[in-house]
Image (cartoon, rainbow, N blue to C red; front, side):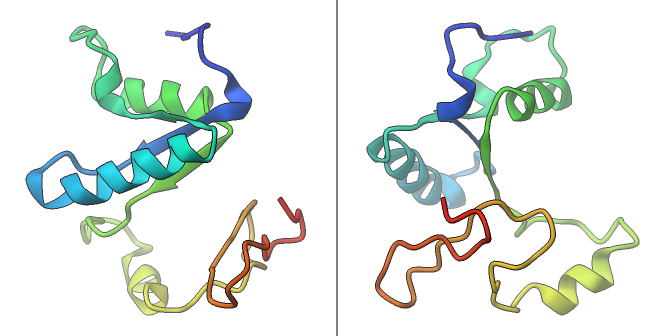
Length: 118
């Protein structure tokens, strides 16, 4: 399903649990994305009950230039789980493979630390 009224270059897919513990984080993410002039996209925006949840998420990712993923609930079901545990608390450098934007705010600037300098 394509949402033609959405602009790919402004879309930010947010993958965040919808339970009460994550509601404050989701609200903060939504507000931040909107204040940055971008359009948040979340799985609950589509009320099509015939569309499988995974398919909704795939479509939203495909339709979004940016994404924010919450990895705090990864279950130990994959082979990569030990690697993820080993790196979960490792600070990013901006040089990680596939990373297209990274703002850490630690140096009191809003400079993108990746080679793309977004």
